[in-house]
Image (cartoon, rainbow, N blue to C red):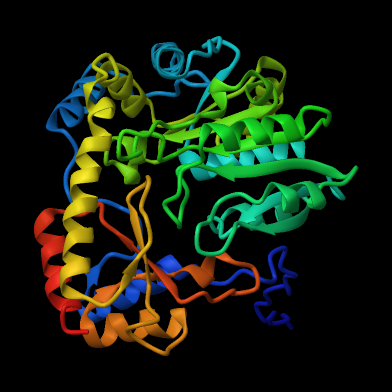
Length: 390
């Protein structure tokens, strides 16, 4: 007589007990359900340059559809190195110091896995992008949270120094900053360089919004500062720069010894990155105009959206120095918490935003929410018309 076996799924113990569905997924789903204008999740609702699509099609037609070299095709790595040298004055060897990644999120976790061991401490500056902490947890590291100054979101170097210990392995910085839209100054970068000089602490520099800096300011890449460049993984994103977030192509620049370790992890967690897109990007980067004109492009959208908010709403606008985000203080509009306000705003007013409390481990609520203005002008105008009802 045969035995009937019941299917059984073994119990799994999560490696990320504090992680649920991200706020971006929640708000985007709610926006779709309520037919709201989605200014929550950070992605454009407009098309990229048709020339870039033509370059992809040409690359596919030319037969570039098989595995590329593990660190990325040479032409693209050459173009990345040339761009960094031209903009920031630091020369990276395209063969040993540049790697093409499956977006910036993969780049960040790969850098963390390459350098962080169990027991190591990694400093994150809150509010911070939501992948940093789970990445550190997966590497077995300990997260050390240091708040940026509430209200201004400037780095507090006294608190950073106090948070450092013999176990500090790395610090993650992000400029231009998501979610606050602040941009680190040259003086702040030099202060970080000075603070880290006597240590062996690595820097993971999230610079995905490098080409979105406004009001004639400049992006202070860690590549500009020799003492930082020597210890840093610089992460950037073609998705952000060229309005193709769904392509998930980014890159990392780092000194050769750091990059050698990075590639050891990269080859086993993704191995290679979309081949025709790499060829298209290499071709497209021959003309620097698209990224050189990006600050003016997004500054105009920032100004359109900010002027509308100032005219039509009682929000207090925080300064947007870079990125494609505008933060506002909701204190004059509502007594709700940030999270509850964003839910109410989406359901009742028809505009989705993101609470800054979602970017803090302790849910710190300072009555500030984030809008994304990487949208068509008509999308921004539609959102402003709805927000005028507040």
